[in-house]
Length: 231
Image (cartoon, rainbow, N blue to C red; front, side, top):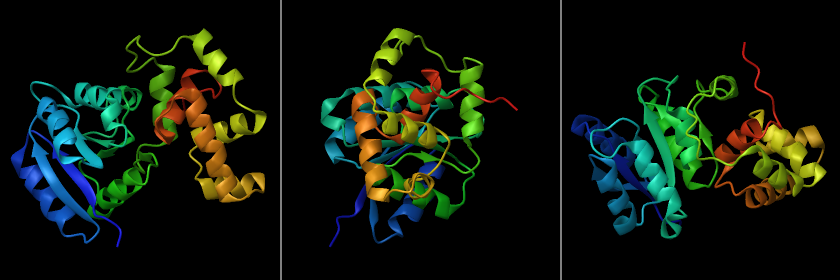
């Protein structure tokens, strides 16, 4: 039997945490292992509960979700922890910063219950989650405007060096990932197997130092490999 996905809920609103707990605990393949009202407590609980997925509110008093996500992604002992950011508004000034900080994706607090549960499963599987309303166009727009830039990411020379390490096929796959295509869709486009695509994606992540697909999307745009289209 597959172990239940261990979920940590982080939000300063107790009522929301309670609602999320009821929803998550109602699923046979997942369980809530802890709740936190601020980012600092979230990092501690991520360690002590061995959580698989953290549902993290972006805005909280004290240590906010963005800082907490950076702390989690920077800790080698928490390399297997996936963070899904929760935001009140889909167009949030911190969305790209969250992805840069190491989040696997983000979801609006107004998402349907099935969307939230799917987000947990997708993140736990090591994939990236970008909610349906948060299209690649949104990310492209933020990056085109320099939104969320914190000056801590790799510079152009470093990106160029990393991209040079990719094979032609890996670059091609990276562009398609940034275009929002799934492995199955990429496989169909390139006439290869989904397993082959997954292998290329994993190699690209390793060479680019990306935790998951969300980081690949941001890297593809920030490196200039994919040019944002602002409509």
